[in-house]
Image 1: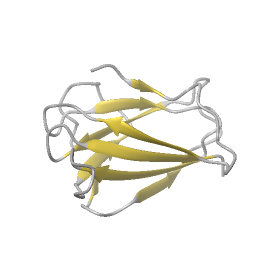
Image 2: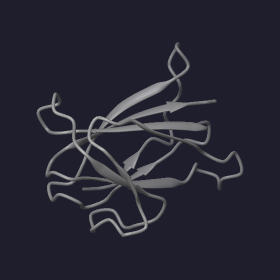
Image 3: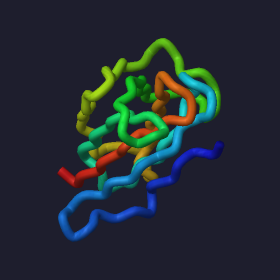
Image 4: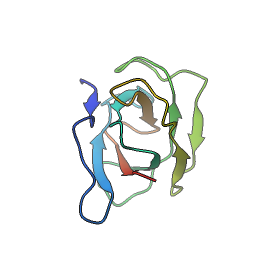
Length: 115
């Protein structure tokens, strides 16, 4: 699968942007998510393909889309929401993060906020 490009998204009227990103068909393979420049806070949660069962996953700042996620990753427990701030000094285009779920064909719910 190709990277998920969120660089042209904008916050909605509530000031956020939420998207459900389909992950790789192979468990633990990374999906690149390209962030918009305006995003300063990112919330992530993993769910299984039935969209009602929580899943666990990993988040990394580097990787290769479609390949196994590396060992330099943060583990996110099933049911947890992982939140982090993104530097305003990023390169044009917003930069990327890499996510992978513990089960095949899962989803990552991504919530972007300007602050």
